[in-house]
Image (cartoon, rainbow, N blue to C red; front, top):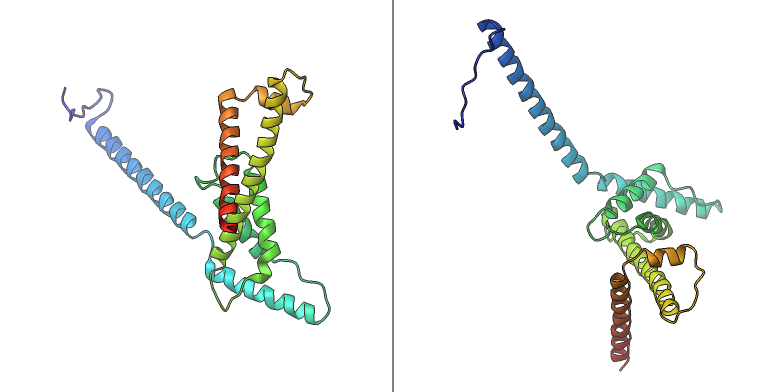
Length: 213
């Protein structure tokens, strides 16, 4: 089969009409191609620079000054500016989509924990030591995510373990959604989850004992 088939002119088109139509189609295809590349480039730039570190730094420094002035005057601390709040929200939202965290069903709770911690420890940002508030907030949110994951896993372990023991002993269990969650989850997954969690607990206790010695 010929890899480069010859373009044939339809019988219902004149020679001039055929080539005019052909040229128009080529132009349209080129426009679509260039427009797609243009928007892809814009999206990459927006994704890369979704937070302006310099602007965020200046806004944060100004907010800290406003807080200090309010404190000296005996007034209430001013509300966090919209720009700072939106920046923190964007950092938390973007971080929750990273491969490390994207698979969890409680990402909204993780993001809320991160935002809450940023607002809580915002006053600890020291502009004399760093001019990178993006990294500062990212670190706070990162550890907030880890704490939420540890908390959720602990709760999941307690549910799985108690349900597993009750069912294995033939006891009735009136847990509503709890028992539905258990029954709809693979037995192998539950067993592996329990074993993995308990194994990490043992390692953690052993590490603590070794450090104390």
